[in-house]
Amino acid sequence: MTLWWDGMGLTYFKRFRMEYDLRHGVPASVPVPPGYDLVPFSVDLIRDHATAKFHSFRCELDANVFPCLGRRDGCLRLMREITSRAGFVPQATWLCRYRDSDSGTMQPIGTIQGLQFEGWGAVQNLGIDPGHRSLGLGSVLLERAATGFRAAGLQRMHLEVTTDNTAAIRLYERLGFKRAKVVFKAAEVAGV
Ligand SMILES: CC(C)(COP(=O)(O)OP(=O)(O)OC[C@H]1O[C@@H](n2cnc3c(N)ncnc32)[C@H](O)[C@@H]1OP(=O)(O)O)[C@@H](O)C(=O)NCCC(=O)NCCS
Image 1 (cartoon, helix red, strand yellow):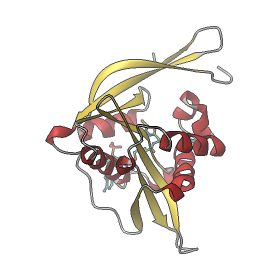
Image 2 (tube, protein in one colour; image 1 turned 60 degrees about the vertical axis):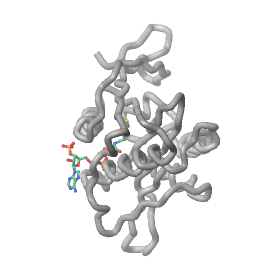
Image 3 (spheres, protein in one colour; image 1 turned 90 degrees about the vertical axis):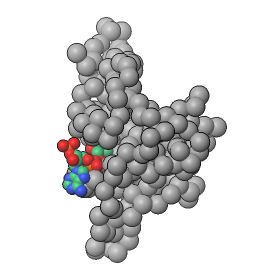
């Protein structure tokens, strides 16, 4: 069972903590496809990360687990909160953009952020806009984040994923993440 309601308004989502040993290298990825680029973190890109996050998560299960992911302003708040934490790892935080053929401008379509805590790199909110999935971009962002964690001196990284998110779990396992334990996240979900 992936979620249940406690009768008092809280829904509990079952999630896997998945771990990766960085001492033996970083997850494999593919070349960045034509038309896309990857941009390292800088403060002036916080809004672009928030836009990519919103488009990646708004129709996904995780927008129930973390309601802020389903709102534009929530994504901006979350980005500001992550990037102002003491454990923020800018080297593990990347934006993916796509050249829009009509306007010729680079549009944000993917994001990943890194935090560190007790010697672990913690992957936050990997997301690719639905129109740009299955091109290898999620793997590329994870590889960049892993390289950034190693540059920050970290030997291990982890992430949490909702157990229903089979596409993401398949990707993480193929890249070498191992399921370490089950955790539960409580959330207030309207209508449940
Ligand atoms: C999970 C997520 C980030 C994956 O992003 P993605 O860019 O599609 O990831 P990739 O392209 O690297 O890999 C996904 C699939 O594309 C395939 N793929 C990888 N490189 C490819 C390439 N060059 N050409 C074609 N397909 C490719 C992979 O084999 C994989 O296939 P699978 O579905 O059988 O596992 C994306 O689905 C997403 O944003 N989901 C919603 C947000 C979310 O749940 N995030 C995870 C939170 S824990």
